Length: 242
Image 1 (cartoon, rainbow, N blue to C red):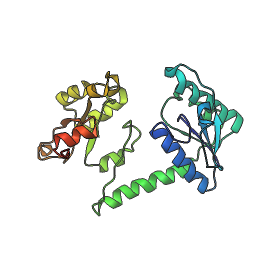
Image 2 (cartoon, rainbow, N blue to C red):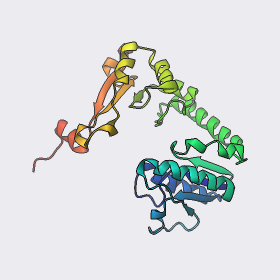
Image 3 (spheres, rainbow, N blue to C red):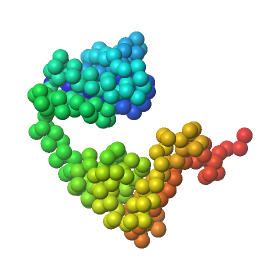
Image 4 (cartoon, rainbow, N blue to C red):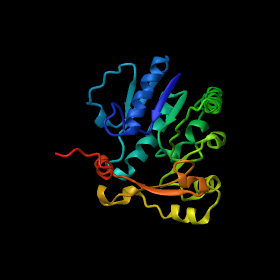
């Protein structure tokens, strides 16, 4: 099967999580016999790359930083659908959202049966392992991407910035029980990346579940995470004296 991976800046990984994920995923798919191509920016073309079975396709994107990922993902989708005629496309992020409808309109085949099989296996695993005291950790940027049955099996939730609007906020409201004061406080969270520097960043979280004795009251708890490992070590008196 021809699989396109779109949404990262490119491989080999040198920037962040999407690039690392794209590279590791591509390696795994190749081992299972799939033909994999990862869309990358031209600047990645001259970096050492040893995975000969993974094809890289270089796309010239906008030079404007705010438009770079959007333009790259959109052009990559066009190329994948009309030039490579890929069987499946894996999107990383939502930067190509303007043209994500193209694969379905123009016949890019999605492995619905295989996806359904994986989904059912995951749901069964979550239900079964809980009986034996084994836990799962699900990390997602949206609540809508998690199956309702998986959400129903979870006991502890941590909600960071980004769920204060639209359907995501409605899902959040349903999970925490609609406490108006808690929801209002959550909506006051600031985007950490809007800060001027690392020192002024605030990583605020709302949590529900048995994370502390206060949790058994059933009301959400709020916390602010440390910005750096050094701050964590200092506050917990774990720094060694020079």
